Structure formats: C-alpha cells, structure tokens
Length: 619
Image (cartoon, rainbow, N blue to C red; front, side):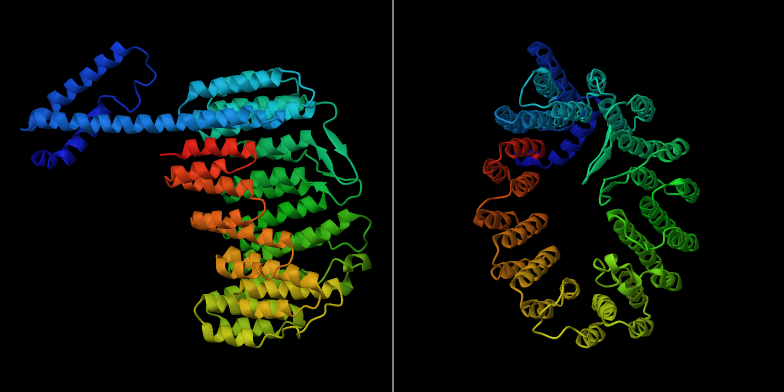
C-alpha cells in the first residue's frame, strides 16, 4: 500500500480532469431507476479509468483495490449525508403539518419547499407545494380572505424562488385579484433579473404593469393612525425594478404619477413617491442618470418626500465628486422646504424633523469629502435654538442635534486629515455648551482612533460635563444628559458614562440610561461589561433587552455555547435567537448541536423552519 500512496495526488488530479471531461458528474445517476442502466454506465466508467489512467501505474491491482475502497467510503458518506438531510426535512414537514394556525402552516410548508428545491430535491419540493395549493383551495372558517390573499401571493413568489417559474406564473394568473397578480409578477421579474434572464424579466414586468393598471376598488384607505394606497405601493416597486432593467425614462415617468398618503391626524405617512425615486436612485451609478432623476424629482408633490429624495440625490452626487451640485441641492431644499412657522398637524412636525435630517445627511457627506466650507454652510442653515421655533414645536426640540451632527463630522474629518488646530478652533467657536460638549467628544474620539491618545485625553478631561448628582428638572434636561452619556460610551469613556448615569436621582431614568449603556457595550463586543451591567438592572424587560443584544453579538462572534448559556438562563428563550444559533452551528458543521438547539425551540413554526434551514446548510 505504501507504494500506492505516492501516486494518489496525481491519480486524484487525473481522475478529476478526465471525469469532468467525460461528463460524469456527482449524482448523475441519482434520478435513474433502471439498475441495469446504472450498472452498465458504472462499468463503462471503470473501463475508461482503467484504460486511460491505471495502465500508467505498475501496481495496477493494488490501485484498483484502494480506489474501490475510497470510492465506496466516499459514496457511503455522501449517501449518509443525503439521508440525514432528507430525514431533517421530513421531520420539519411533519412538524409544519401539525401547526394549528392555518396561515402559519401554509407559510412554513412553502418555506420548507423552497429549501428542498435549493438542495436539489425538486420532486419532493413540488409535492409540498402541491400540498400547500390544496390547503389554499380548501374552505376554512379560521382562514380570512385577507390571509388567503397574502398566502396566495407568498406561495406564488416562493414557487419562483424555488425555480418553478412557469408553475408560479400559471398559479398566480388564476388569482382573481389584479393587485396580487401585479405584486407577484413584479417579484418574479426581480428573481429572473437576479438570475440573468433579462428578456423574460422585462416581459414579466410589463405584465405586472398591465395588472397594476387594472386595479380597481378598495385599494386605499385613510384612518386616524394609518393609511395605505396599495396601487401606488406596487407602482413604486415596479418603477424601481424598471430602473434596474435600464428602463429609466419609463421608471421616472411612473414615479412622477405616484402619490403618498397621510393618516387623518397627519402624524403617519406612507411615502410611496419617495420610495419610487429612492428605489430608482439605488440602481444608478453614473452622473447623467442621477441628474435625470434629479430633474424628474422636481415634480414630487409632498415637501416631506421631496426632502427625503433630494438629500439622497445630493449624497449620491457628492459620492461621485459632484460636491458643488450637492451643495446647490441642499440650498434649494432649505429654500423650498422652510422650517414650519405654525403647527396645524403631526405632518408639520414630521416636516421639521425630515428637513433637518435631510440637510444634515448632505452636510455630513460634504464634510467627509473634506468640503468643510460647504458643510459649514449647511450647519449654519440648520436650526440652532428652540426660541426660533413655533411654541408647540419647541416641546420636540431638546438641542440642535442635526447641526451638531454636521459640526462633529467636520471636526472628525479635520482630525483624520491632520488638521487638529482647525478642529480645536471649531470647538472654541461653538457658542452653546451643549453643542460644544457633543462636538468635543466626537473630536476626542477621532483622536484616540488615530492613536493621538494624549490630545484625546486632554479633550475628554476638559469637557464641561453636568454636575453630579443630577436631578433632571424636565424631559429636555434628561434627554440632553442621556445623549451625552451615550456619546461618552460610544467614545469608549465607559467609566465616566457610568458615573454620570449612576448619579441620576430618578430611578426610572437611571434604569433607562444604564440599559442603553449596556446595549451600546454589547454592540461594541464588550460582552463582560454589558453582562456586569445587567446585574445592576431592576426591570426584567431591561435585563431581557440587554441579554438578547449580548446573545446576538455572541452569535455574530461565533461564540455559540456562550450564547446558549445566556438564553438558557432566561425565563423564556427567544425563538429567533435559537434559530440563529442552530443555523450557525449547522454552517460550521456541528450537526448534533444544531439539531439539539432546533429541537429546543418551543414555537413549532420556528422549529420546523429551523430544521429545514439546518438541512440546507449541512455539508
């Protein structure tokens, strides 16, 4: 056997090349039922190997024996894995079929069918889809018409995701609702585009648009706290899809016809027209199409939606070097959408915040592009004090948050480009204490990130922090204090942040602030610090929030046993987190741990979906 081993690398390479050339691929015979056919082809394969390769080696019989052993072991291993996968799938199917809530059962079975198809088990996948379709056709008093329509749409889309495009199209065409058909055809078009089938994708998208134009009846509503216009919602998605297929003119033309909606109280909106333009913009990379989108966006009717779109266009232009163009958009935005002087509804409050955030986004991007003067112009436009606002709006304005975000971005970029003196001068020029604290923290943080620890320490030590112990006399005082504490935590000044938080006299405010510190620490991956803080929290809700955040971070880090320990210590484990752990175990080849974790999930829908996901991930 020793003499044989020296030839194995060469043999393996030769086998790979020759078998691939001869169109012999793994699993090629798995769908055949004729044993004679299979045996004859296997004999041909052995003859081929024998004549082309083995004749070159002196120990031919020894090679044949060893090759047979290796081949049998390999086949057995593959067959064993396939059997294990199918067992898991069948277990998932059995659990799904026992789910009592009808809509959840359908959703879970169709999810499993998609994963079966993704593993190559197309026939079994189709069988499960057929079961789902039968369930959809049955009358069930616990299955509302709305739930049925949702299930029809999702099943059609999942059929396409599983690769059964024609079946998906055929099934969806039988759905009576033109809205559902339009939604399905749009999604199928996206799936085809992702797979490079552009011609068919365009044809299907054209049909989606036709169905959209046929939508009539109750496709919109307005209530005190909500609203919807389903026809315009699907049009916004179709226009984005059209731009993906390089049909920009038609996409923009449709986008200009779309309207958003607002609830009766005005404090809730659905920004369909903005979504259309933003979806289009997301697919653009070159200057001319972006400019074309900018010109088309002048026809957006809602000030709020206009601000949302214009800011993203400006940011995109700045990213490709068109910073002057970006600044001109910011100035136009500020002029055409002024800060409201009166408040008649929740919508006016929304405009104030969207306007501020939109201008800040442009200012931050210009600062990152080192256009400090341009960024400073935008900072000057942003509201600096609450006294300039309508009285009612003053209750929503604690400090100039948007202005601070732009000034902080300027200061950080100055440090990053070794302009420390200018950054320090920026701090000195800020008149109000609150804004100065935030900008100083941001600059000090950037200094320590750049290895300038001494200068960073000096800035942290000279902060004009609130005196302790602190008794917040208003919600405004507390919000400012809270945000300073979180800014310090983000800057890795945890000890100072903790001292400030523990100085709060109000127990509820202290609990809320400590919880947010712990959440931030978990985000940074400072797991032990976050867990130590949990011990000081009183509320079970606060503890659970932090523990879940820590668990999620541990999963991300691949520390799955630690994540499980934390979950197991909680009164009620989170099904979604257990699903994540099980899938992570499976992706790293830890089959037993993956299955055990999945089986510990009490929610049957999650359990079935997790087992199917594991089956797909097993190697």
